[in-house]
Figure 1 (cartoon, rainbow, N blue to C red):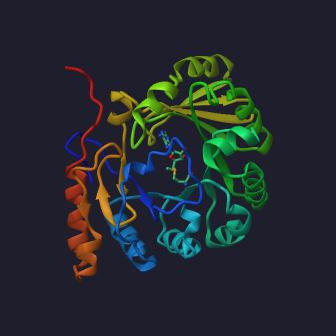
Figure 2 (cartoon, rainbow, N blue to C red):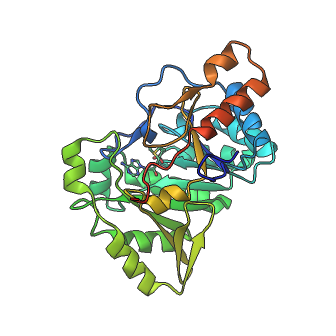
Length: 303
Ligand code: SAM
């Protein structure tokens, strides 16, 4: 599927639930607002099979908190069995301790864990969760052999002074680190105004520290800084025509709607309704193609 801007859809970001066991003050909820129902295991897997038939090769499961889905291991196992090149999840990590073994057995080899702070008090005030739970879940996942990337949204006057500690933590566990700029989506306007932190200064510092800098072609052409054994990425989507120009991702909401862009909710295509009304796989394929045609860069070069 190639969209009208010449961008091929290679990956899907699939929300499995809007339920979450944390209350992150900065959460953008993947651009979703109150969905009515969740896709079942069979519906998720059918959707992924069709997605694969139209060229999707990478699937990232998200939420809400995907580990709240008790059938997550079956979802992962089914998706891996289809022969996708990459199947991963993004999780807050609080339930990894209990679930990592089953996920490993199902074939999961890569996770992103949201960790905005390695200071227990800051973590608790941002998420209402317990940092120790996340640390032990990450350790178990790493010991099993799962690749862990830490996702840290960096916010002014909250954790912008913690970048070096996050680098140290990620290096210490043998993981990777992704520093993310706060996105203004589903957020209180005053919160965003106060806490948005421009990561360009951090990126220059990483550039100076790095032994090597690579560009990740398939992920918005973002840079990857290799500092000794540590890999660091910086995600700066806000107002970035470059980020959007290199987007190869389509989204699926937890209630089964195809979402062409994180930032928009006015062009969703319902695939779950038709599936529940008995449509064929080729009907779903057409819906994917329609969603791909609706993809357009949210931020563009001023002409
Ligand atoms: N519960 C899972 C988790 O914590 O990873 C999945 C959902 S969470 C919305 C997915 C990702 O979005 C996390 O990596 C989180 O850091 C990121 N995120 C949440 N709100 C954000 C915001 N306002 N700006 C940028 N990234 C955000």
